[in-house]
Image 1 (cartoon, rainbow over the protein chains, first blue to last red):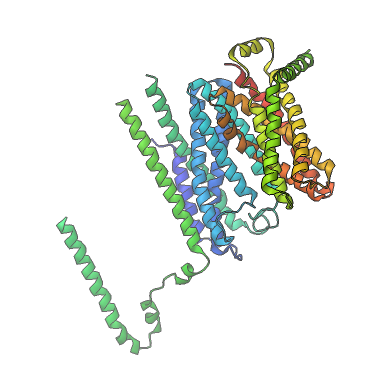
Image 2 (image 1 turned 135 degrees about the vertical axis):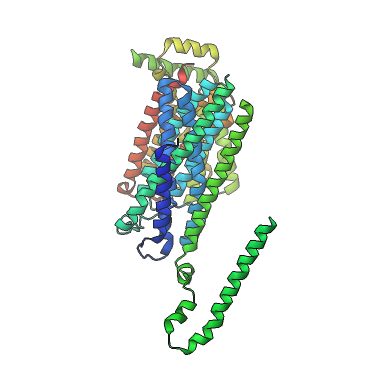
Length: 220
Length: 88
Length: 219
């Protein structure tokens, strides 16, 4: 049988798709209706961060337990995280083009943070592919994963608070946070985050099962 | 297959003739003072909804997310197929 | 006892370095040549942002070059010897501290040559030197661990760059911001925030490196 939380994920996302389009939103200049992207673009980033955090947790678990499964989960979670960055980046570019007037800007610490996250995880996969011995690969990539995640965390969490950002809520841009993410929007935004995290867990579950199957079939 | 095409064609024909009937009755009704019917004849589309407020951006965003998810699904499917073949 | 061992290890690093004068001389030539090339290209840099960016790019490449060899010299037999005699924490700390000292000296040298050839721009010298000191120590903390990782994986130099550049980025940005403030001569009340972050990053990096090196060590 399919797990209950997978159904829940689908239902929550369905709810956010429907009610996200229908519910009233604050009327703001420049943003107009695109403020609804908050329900679709932002949760993907939350899911990505969640997956990367999940990957790090399993990397730490691998260092303690030295088991193969943790390493597989860590690897697959990083893959799912990297995948989620693709729709996140594309939708972000789309939204930026029609509100800030540019596809990409280097001024914004959030965009830079994302670019660095993608680079870090690409480096992680290059590292993985360059080591052939399984246990060695697992341990070394776990070490890199933890170190890189902490640096990325510093970048994403701390630096944006010190510099200006085009993103609402930080710097000289008080769009949500102040009055904007009102109770009406919260009824969609928070479920959307939960829904996308659950969906990413679903993807991870499938990928993990495939990877474990692959591993056992290789070692028979 | 032929039957399906035939029934589809029939349905289309019926639909078109129905629509014509509605249009045909319109000038007759115009003389009467029932204005509500005239408004009903002009279908209430959400024209304003789509022309303003950059709602297209939201639709594009949704489309991108959907395309990415489907592409990823295909990728996973292909990978699973390979492993299945190997296990066999 | 542990500090004695640590200082012995650091001393050993220095001895090895000075015995093989060619590597140190190689780095010096690298610094002078890079700065000279940039001087030839730019003649004299007037724009502070360009000056700053070029300086930090040169700094980063020198840091990567210096640190990348800190674990490649460890051969298999030497590794076993170290494994028997030292604790991993001492070992990585000795590498980090040695790299810190080396990088501090080399960054000062780079700064000296760079301001000589390309033109000095820094108004707040104290701030700039502090930035240089702390960022070189943080860089060496990151790069020591990265070099340990790269030495465990087989292909070294390119992997080292691939692994360390994205990880160095937060450090780079803070350092660039700080040195820009120093160049413009802004008040310390503006930039102390960034300096605090840089110092905090130092602690985070060194703590993480010592923690994680345990797991790279055993094989």
